[in-house]
Length: 624
Image 1 (cartoon, helix red, strand yellow):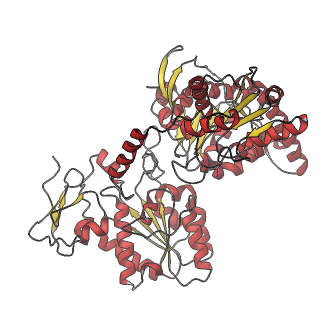
Image 2 (tube, helix red, strand yellow):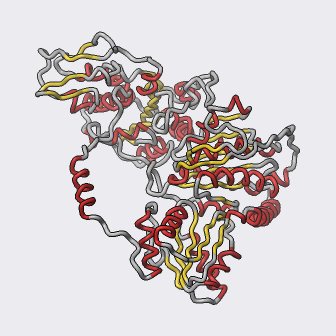
Image 3 (cartoon, one colour):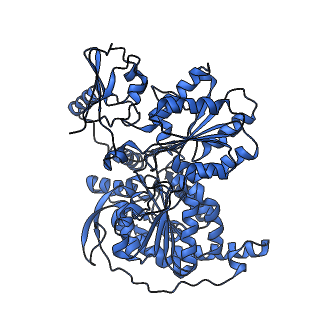
């Protein structure tokens, strides 16, 4: 109940929780999206209170569908929000660009969380650029309080100007904690309605498209003016100015307080359209300006354009002159280093030699942890079975291409498995596999993909494989959950985001519906049967699908759906370390030349028993 409370309540919230509270205050009818760090907590937070606040909260099968569902709600006059991480916007972009032209009736907010420094992997894409070419207004908060306020305002601006509004954060802001003062909850009592208007809601002809485009551009400008209160200009007598936005604003404020700086500042909250008038006012006052923005020089480019129009010489410090980098996220040292350059004096605190010694000592004591699967993860059984099938068919490791996909499945690229060769985007394992096979390369291809990823983006590529009779093995690693992102449900989980029972959509039925004739369902804990399934699939002349179904180990532990921990017979154990070297399972502990099983970690998957050459591993008595 973190985000439920009366007006005036003050709570410590995560940035994403504050965004969830903003959706409540704005009277959103529906919030949907696809799990993706750093945006996930918005829907998780709302899902936990959905019944109490009478809000529809759902996970969608992918981001494109999420935005389409939200848009459908908004076109009936109600309010809706779609959430996603930066890479998810790529998936949704086709519909976002088209729906932007049609606009909206009810408030429609698109929340996207970017990830400088790639804490959650993928690309350091800067979706401020997307807002610019999509001609959509974009707001960017710098702390949780502002994030909540911007969500409420975004819905109002969206409805007033009949345009979708983007809200963008970065990992720092999305996962920052801060006190948030609750505002009133807007009660919206509307009857959904939608009227046929093909001139607005279709793209049937260039004249209509251009008219929609012109309307969008005008509405975007109006929305920017309506949100101008989030652009904070503070002018001083100093000839030095700083322009910034988002998380770097907090670092700048700290530096100003720490060093008692009297510089002029412009904190930009409206990223698109940028506040030209306030930028001009600051540039008129200064001889030099520092642009503090993470990733691309979007603001910096715009400042240079305005200076060209003004005909004024102002020295600009930023990414173009190398003052800051377009890679990674900012910290206090980076900001103070940039300020040192423009001010001509050192503001960076010297490194304490004793502190540095302690840091180096701590680094030397740190334990190098391999990135591998959890104890009992069913994917261990899958990859062991793939390797065994390759050996049975006399293939060397370099003879079989295994394309990986987004999610826990990609951990198979690491030791001791060293199986996966690629990782590109959701569903790309199958598409790339199709391409490898069609290149004429003589190596067999296995596409390893998780169940949620398959539902998200793998199905079209599987149809492509069937259509073109591609000889590829698609391994759908079905652990019935979105494991890597935080154990959200999938269409195969049997329940929804808010916990209601739901029909289970089975991957094997989809595969058969796509036309795949060779479809097998196996339990990856059964290494022998799973190995045989891969042997047969690799021999099959055409597309084949193996569904490897076993619940995620962590989810199984939470549901108390685990087996008895295994034990190792000390007399039989030869100390060959085959189990440890083959599985890298955290439940297997080498002690004095032999191996013990930690009963607190082992969930009784029996995969280690399958690989033990002397059959020294058997079932124990049970967990305490």
